[in-house]
Image 1 (cartoon, helix red, strand yellow):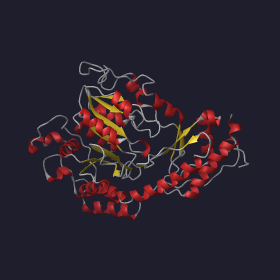
Image 2 (cartoon, rainbow, N blue to C red):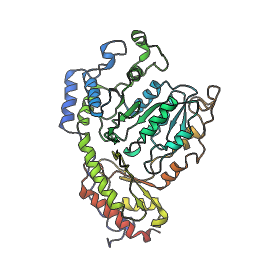
Image 3 (spheres, rainbow, N blue to C red):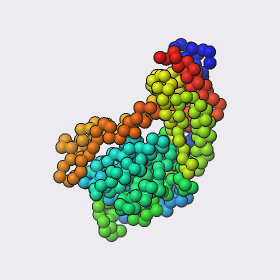
Image 4 (cartoon, one colour):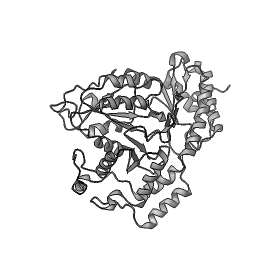
Length: 432
């Protein structure tokens, strides 16, 4: 630890690149060849036919997700974003409606609401789990509220019992964006069975992936049908299945391919092992980095299993005596890049709170007349002023997000991370 900081020209803690996050193996290759050899790369038909629901790989993939989560239905889609849009539509959300959603998430979570000409109402986050603050949620329910969009941020499940109880009292649909929490559990129940609809992501940088893809879980037969209609040109088949509620049953092409489904099924079989690996690494870092004054590891509620999409630490600049961004830059200099990308496995902050983006600040989405945020169709007043979710803004100013724990990194790799943090902390006076 006597060497000067790498950012000042000293020798870094480590020079060997961190291993690539690549867990594609023979199982995925065999699955892809199986789909290729069938000659059927997509078996969907946008008309009333058995193939309206997809081919054999799609059906195998959806059954695997039902078996894994315990949910009754799975509807595959070509991305988590597509799944969010389909879920908002299935919930019968439309112009003039409001949907409660957190602002600390990927933009698609809120954009899915705007897609159906509804208005996102941003609910602040809990300062410990970074999921929806249920007390703020209760305060923001109005007669216009149609649904609640929950996010299991970073992999920690939200307070689903409270959310579902409040939703039942107000006759609201709960949509759970679980892009970052596959395999997570809440009070002994798997994520995927907690909300009316739950969406998982299979994007290339998620826990498991098939390049791009997603899946929506539900126990509700009617919601399942509506999701399937929205996925695959539903307006063409509603006469055949005698749909009574036509609202939002027009469809898109949100279909997953046979190859992607085959790969996704093979990946799902690996999920638990990959999660165990992440959690072991994360627990080590939580314990060791938590010993550094001013570095607070993520909270994991006793009744939850955290999936650690990323591992977050709260940083107290006053206690450390160095600005967060400076500290992160110094740590990053001590640790080389991973083999599979050209940016570090540590960064200050996460995302800009969504309501601070131009679309919300200027209230312009469709055309130039502030639709859907203003107009005769909407009787509310969308509040996107800076400071409307103060905890979110405070967290984003103090949080450090890391991905060191991702497989196939080992505990030996984690020790280098701890050494890097300790070295920077020891030499922090030189950063002032």
